[in-house]
Length: 112
Ligand SMILES: [Zn+2]
Image (cartoon, rainbow, N blue to C red):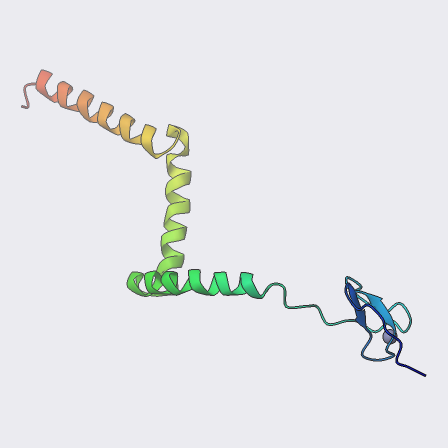
């Protein structure tokens, strides 16, 4: 009695009951054993780790997580405040315009 030769490509064996399942099976079709999920996310995890390396330095130079949190909160507040003007760029144009008008008004009044 020779060993049964099974092409294992695209298959996996249940560690509990040795039933051969499809490679993408999540649970054993025979006993219902949950298969461990292959660490496919490993490369992704690595990318996040590498990306975080530089960003951790940035957080440090900001003064820590609380500082970063504060910046984000400030940005949120700033964006809300500048919304009526149509964003930061438009707000800057409005600022310059009003400054100019104020300047001209002061010139008219003889304050300059
Ligand atoms: Zn099984």
